[in-house]
Image 1: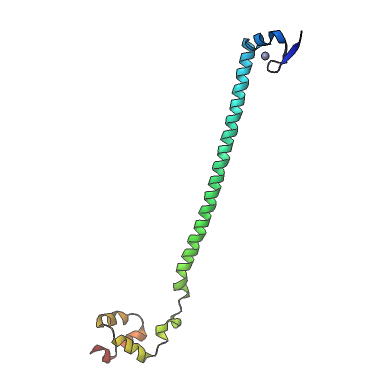
Image 2: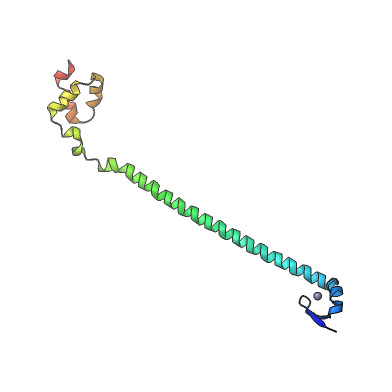
Length: 134
Ligand SMILES: [Zn+2]
């Protein structure tokens, strides 16, 4: 009579009795426990995988946030650039001879002249010119 080992129960069972053994309470219980164990391992692997995916996503978004922050800072730096690097003497209006400024001002409405006289002391002085106020 051929004897086989039940891997689950670790017992020798004759081939003729194998089916009966597998229907037995002890074997079915062990079988159930093994299936539950397998299921648990699968679930653990899945949740581990999910966590890693989530972690990767979070890492990515953190990286993206960092990039966005850098871009924003660059933008802010750029927007700061003009006033910081603004060179009063490079202003084309301040390279013009006063006669030309006077001519340009003469083309403007007197209400604009009032505003322009507040720009700086040079313009204020030029705008005092009585020829503009006719
Ligand atoms: Zn068994």
